[in-house]
Image (cartoon, rainbow over all chains, first blue to last red; front, side, top):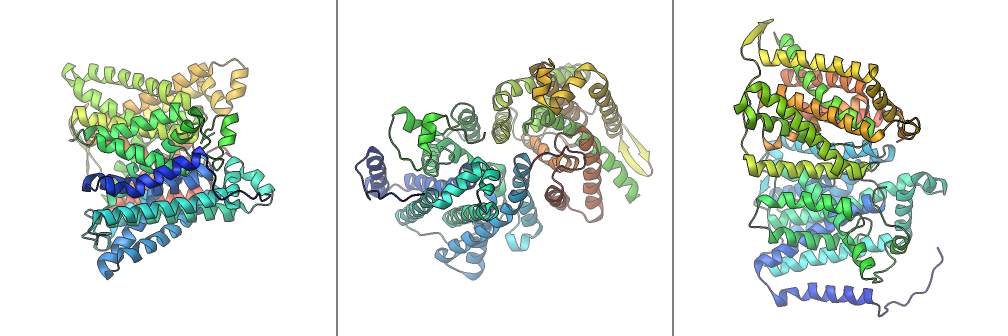
Length: 332
Length: 283
């Protein structure tokens, strides 16, 4: 890649839109500091990081997995356990949880080196199953069915918690987008397009696949640790299919392979989910319906759709130029 | 006594696994997609029987099976069909569908377990183990179905076309096989097998909106036998069913049995991804 000297800031529609959204998010507690509405936004922030972590391996690197919840859950359990038994503060346990996520990511990444397509999908589906089996087997350590509870919260003040989650989300997004636009991101995308060709051009695909899994595990782990402390509890049902599903849904709805799409997906769907709060029975159905519709009719995701529909140059970060030529399909 | 217990319950579990995994393997082999809503077909058939049992057991079973086949066709036509050749897309769409059906059933039928009537009542004592007639029937019917399916796939013209499509879809099209019809027939058979499994097994452990998760328990079977291989599905069912039962009766604990089979499956998939009978698929 030849380096082009780009101006640091340009007054384009893309930058203006992002700046306005950023200001809105930062200033939101000034508009409304209601507990409930901030709680929703906190969930949206955590969901965005979680979905983006899935997107890095699936959308960007092309390793579709069903088991993202594994990193989320492991990190949640580790940070919860450390907090409960050793009294470590969330500031310390969340990064440790993230580190455990990296470890879990590398373990899940190992089969992805050998397996492709359906085989890897099955393997990723059963990893959380194995883990929840282990958790039920050692109830004295993990709390069994009730899980761990009574953990320290991030902060007693909801506004501070909100800013903590926003900070986490922005930093994660910044790092992930930097990775995506760097040479590493290019390598990830080349592995998605054709691993064999990538290998032939002299890329060590083993190293880069594991790197992708490690990064993915880190951010999923951070999100898991944050969520655990924020809810002050974690139980084995976190390993259910629905939680993995959530990451996939947010990322695909937002736009797989764009990273930033996860934020859009997370904010839109979390809000939608809360609007339907009073018809609790319908929430899971809503997830299912949105997922099916997205996959059948909008596989490119809302972010790319928005960019094409209103002809806004949202940037070349995410292969948007390619989209102009041919419709993007995350799973071809 | 213990050995007899393991033998009998293992055989019966083999029946369940083989019926379900044969249907699953048929779709995987022919359409090359994962139908994770396969378990939903099993669950739906059980619910159909529960709500139609007022018209007598025989007619209710027949009508339920027909309804199940129709549901299978609908699922294929509208959800799997557009996703053909997209592994991940089809899997996630059918998984969403399964979750959606679960919630709908929860709303309309309630979350509690529903008991289904036995097809036959009474029990017999074999080798000192009490065996309900329903379980015996299960075993016999499973065997008959397996033999019939084997004959159908290997001896009839339609079976031949199914095998042809499974082997190579493009060439099958070239020699004039209507692949669409073949897909429809396969999904019909697949749904029918899931329905029969429900008729036989749902009375033994009742049915709830979560019953569709039974599809996850046949994954080890599929992996062991090789994805999309019918012969492999059978052999895999025997091995996995007996492994589970042996662990359950000697060491104890349902969680452990499941975890161990999952772990075994993980090792198999890493060492020999094509399974025992699977075609050498690129990985």
